[in-house]
Each structure stands twice: as structure tokens, then as C-alpha cells.
Amino acid sequence: MASNGHESIPDIVIGRLPIYLRALNRLAEEGQEITSSHELGQRLGISSAQIRKDLSHFGGFGKQGTGYQIGYLQEKLRKVLNIEQEWEVALVGIGDLGKAIAHYRGFGDRGFHIACLFDSDPDKVGQTVGDFTIQPLSDLPAAIESKNIRLAMVAVPAPYAQEVTDLLVKAGIKGILNYAPINLSVPAGVQVQYIDPVVGLQRMTFYLND
Amino acid sequence: MASNGHESIPDIVIGRLPIYLRALNRLAEEGQEITSSHELGQRLGISSAQIRKDLSHFGGFGKQGTGYQIGYLQEKLRKVLNIEQEWEVALVGIGDLGKAIAHYRGFGDRGFHIACLFDSDPDKVGQTVGDFTIQPLSDLPAAIESKNIRLAMVAVPAPYAQEVTDLLVKAGIKGILNYAPINLSVPAGVQVQYIDPVVGLQRMTFYLND
DNA sequence: AACTGTGAAGTTTTTCACAGCC
DNA sequence: GGCTGTGAAAAACTTCACAGTT
Image (tube, rainbow over all chains, first blue to last red; front, side, top):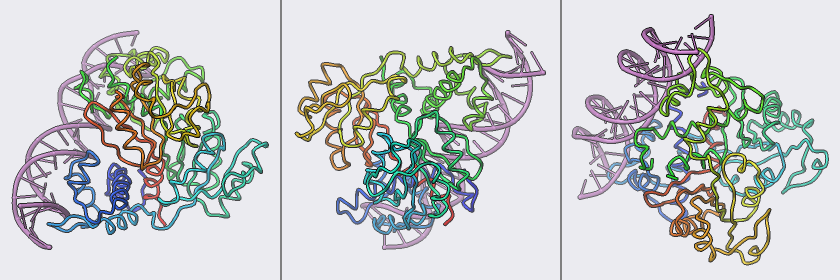
């Protein structure tokens, strides 16, 4: 995907690490302290060999004969994924979806903090959602630069998503989580991830006969 | 993935079809009538050969020398994905997220219709959201059976997601779109797709140095 | 001239299977 | 006995490159 010293590690492996971490969080909550590639694989529907191979890219995190210390592995994966310190995230588009995102408590636990909110609607600007006040898009460049924010979520209607993206990129954003059902074009060095529930649904209906 | 007469088509191909369809919708909106694997690939960051190969699994949709008729290809992809007729979907969990999902207009255009809402909170039961009244979980089995619903979205807090899933599966649901940040276990023949924004963010931070 | 559809080649990803360790 | 880490083998996936069509 991007090129910054991680050349040799397949992106597909990186994509699985957050899944492993999520499962480990769960196991830890259940009070378990040790797990194995087999147990993890069983829970995730992934082969144990694949889990061992994936983890082996980053060093030996387990103990032969024993398995993996959950707390230790969580810590190591957080380090690999670069979420040891919390990341600040900008959110653009404070409609129903944006509000739900702003209220969602699941980000904080897992390395992310929504740091500022933007909307183009003058009626919304100045309103507060959670701890923050909605700012106009004209404040975006300055706010992102002054807080040194590198990640953003886009929750505007599809027709505006590309222009918002261009604005974010110009402001220095390096990663965009896009909720609009549209493919974004970004320059090299900027990453995009997509959240489109309909894609998930359509993928399932293929297998439903009738 | 599942086994029902589609044995030979790789799941990874199925996963790309909704992306192609989304891009075609966009092109159609822009008023374009014909496209090529090259143009589509350029927009999506996918090689033209891959697009042609993917589509070739289902027959020849294009014309040599010309490209693909957009309307025709949309129609064919909708047929392949089994979204020619609209699917009814149940939504469980009507918190902030569930409400945002219920209000989201992007489902209808693309083959899905939210047909009933459920929540376990007695204070929410009876409230209306959009066109529907929130029903208690005890109504779920009967409602799903009588309306012959096969798909559901789960938007409850993580600790309840597995039990809700079990209830849905028992009621005959065959595909679940899970918004809770937890891996669900389901019997063979039931599919699950995950929506977890944090996974997308964590995947990006890996590549951000610092 | 431009583009599709497709075998064949090339590359990546997954699984196997086992040595080494607890 | 049970488990990891890992080369080697197998499988899956992507790209190449071109014959065939408009």
C-alpha cells in the first residue's frame, strides 16, 4: 500500500491484525490470560497456521508449548499498529450518521479520539455535539494544522465527499475513513478506507438462493 | 464462502462486484453510457485485466472494440448479486447508531429496505423511527417468520451481540451485518459481514510513521 | 484503433508438516 | 503432549499478452 519502511509485510496481513487485537480484547475481558493460535483461529474462522505466520512477521510473541500471553500480545500488536498513543481524528459531516459517530464510545478504547467536528451547514455551525462545537469548513485547514491531525472521517453525502476529501488532503490529512458510498481519489501517500454497509449486504445476497 | 451452486467463483471476486456496481451507478449519474475496463480500473485503483477477468466469470458483458454498456452491466451485476428484487432487512438495536441506520437513505436505492426495528429497552418499544414502530425482542421470531426476512443488521452493544445473533439465527436469518466490534459465531449456512470503523483506522495508522 | 475475453505465466497467500522448545 | 515459528509445497489470485471482434 504505502511505502514507508514496511515494504516486506503484506497489506493483507496488516488488515488482519486489528481483527486479532479485537479478539484479544474480548478474551481479556473474559478474564483469560493465555491463548493459542488454535483458539484464536477457532473464534475467528481463520487457520491457526495463518495466525502464527502473520504474527511471525513481527517477531516471536508466543511461547512454544504454552501459547500467547494475551496482555503481552495486545501490547505488541498495539505497538505494531502504531496505536500506543492516541490518534486525534477530525469528523466532517454532522448529519444523523456524523452525530452517531460523534457519540460512539468505541473509538476511545481503541486508540482514537474525535478532536473536531465540521459541517458546511451554517445552521449546524456553533451547535455542540458531545464535547465539541461544530465548526465551519472554512476553519478546517487551520484547525487541522494547529492540532496536527493526520486522520479524518468523512460522513457527508456522496456528492460532496470528493471535494471535502480534496480539502482534507490539502490540509495535510494522511488517512481518510470514508462513509460515503463513492470511491475517492487521493494522491499517493494518502490512504483511504471505506465503510459501506450496502457492500456487505450485497456480498451476502449473492449467496442467498432466491 | 457458503456452498450453494456458486462453487467455482472466488469469494474475493464477489466482494469486488458491489464496488464495480457502485462505480457504475456513479458513472450513470454523471450521464455516461459506455465505459471500459480501463476507465473503471483507473477510478477504482484496480487493474483493467482484473476487472475483465472478474466479469468474465459470469459471461461476456462487454463488446470488443467498444467497452461496456453501463446500463446493461448494472443490470447484469444486479442479477448476479441477486438484488434485482428488494430485500427486506431487520434492524436490531435502536440506539444512536441504529437510529442513524434507520434514517439512512442509501439502502433503498441499492436493493435493501429496512422492514422492522427491534430493541430490548422497554422505554424504546412503541416509539416510531421513520415509518416503523420499535418492537420488543420477544416479537422478533414471529415478525421475521411472517415477513420472511432473511437479512438482519445488528447494532446493539458488543456484550449483547452474540445473544441477539443466536436469536436471529434461530428465527431463520441467513445473513447478518454486524456493527458491534466483536466476532460472532454462527452455524454453517449463515453469513456474517462486519462493519467496524476502528479496524479501518487501525489499518491506516500502521502506515503512518510516528 | 480500441477494446474484450482468456489461456498461460507470474506472484502472492495459505496451508502443510515438522524441528525445536516448554 | 502441546504449542510456536518456519521453510517448503500447494493453492489462490493477479497480471501478461494476444487472438478475436467491432
